Length: 633
Image (cartoon, rainbow, N blue to C red):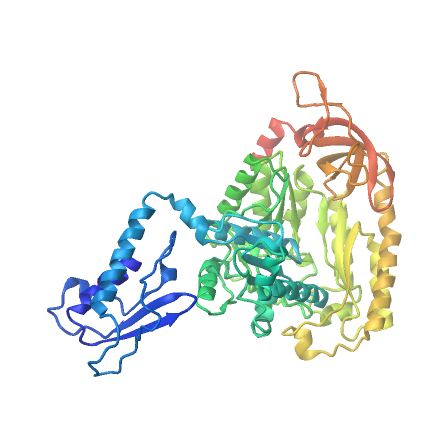
């Protein structure tokens, strides 16, 4: 870059006509030189002049420094010259270019003996990151780390005081999440604003004031407010613009704010292999689609994440294969509306028949081109990786057609766990929420699910105090919870978000104290029904994927999850390995599947006796013949 700029500048010296020059001196960056070239009109111009860019800039920062690059010009050097004036106080332009080329040649000669990796590491910063919100944000942070690693930011630190770049990945679903982010931004601002004092007092170890970068949904929703917050933040980057992060960080070096919150109709990051935050983990998240078309009245996701688009099946299979080869035993497939997955990248007509919704459910957004659906993706993954366990979140109840339910029943490695967000138990409120179903249709779907998959766990989401909700309508939500009997639920008081349908059309008229009281009643109703779900497991034998030591007894007990998502702890002791040939016992390790007989329930977790180390095909008695038959069907 510097070499080409100097050579181009030298070519101008012989024919400076039509060029204007500007010099700029800075105490922090040294001397910079910029010149603009007008359009060349003469056919006789040299080839070097013909290829001359319209604008060139040479600064100290444009050259990778090891010892520094300096022209050693006197501080009193005057660089201004009025047009048409022949007077010039200081060295000539020829002298300037000559000295610059000499310094550049010396620098390039010295760098030939220095490995490129050393230069790259000295010019890039260390990264610290925090993530708030859903699993999708965790996966997004892994994508960001991959992009930054490929751009030379190879080191990640565990404390913000040691970082030159601080990422905070945000959530805009509820106000509480945003308030936590603002609190952290205030601290990061302190690290940047008082950097010299912090370093002097040993409070900070970064090599320069950190650049603070806000990512995710909050970045898109509050971009103007964040950037105007008294220089608190340097870069704001939305969920679809992470590829642009290296360029945005470079803009900060030139005194600019970096911002890109454009939403995309195509971006899925399918070609990027995420850098896993949890090294040596035996579970992982894989994003299969992004965005949401449902436009529920309370939800801001379509405005912060954009429209739905799905990754090609092949790219997902490739990523899951890499995870399997690295030792991952369980993958959770992610998407804002994961079971509306629709891969029409190869053949828009590859789907089976018309797009079907759950019976009694509807959608405001029609599917234009139907490709491979979520059941097709699960079918492919479960067959190619029979010893890997698959979960998925977060779905919408409308996208549970019968073929998906039967596939979940027939495949031993697809977890018997269905997340079925209800949001409310009253049909009028569901209509105001624009959910596309009634209370009766929801209960009918629960009945169908349990008839097809008898031993299924069902979880849900609920909102209390939505706009216009009466006390009687709240009681209907409590009765729905008792009627279904959920294994787990996410429950929240309503928090109105800007840009949503509710914000534009409704009044947030339920007082906050009423919302909180209803939320307390909802949690109590949930606890009444979730206990029996756990109690019913006592006496059964469950296959548990070991995730690590039990924090309550880390020296003696292990803990893991069943395919229903229930946590089970047990004493770590030597066990026979059903897949082993030596007949010897060994203690189970993280990543092992262990058969556990459940002995008691705390109504929030399970405790049992470990029987043997196993694997899924053995536990479910699935042999090669069964796999072949599944492939044939």
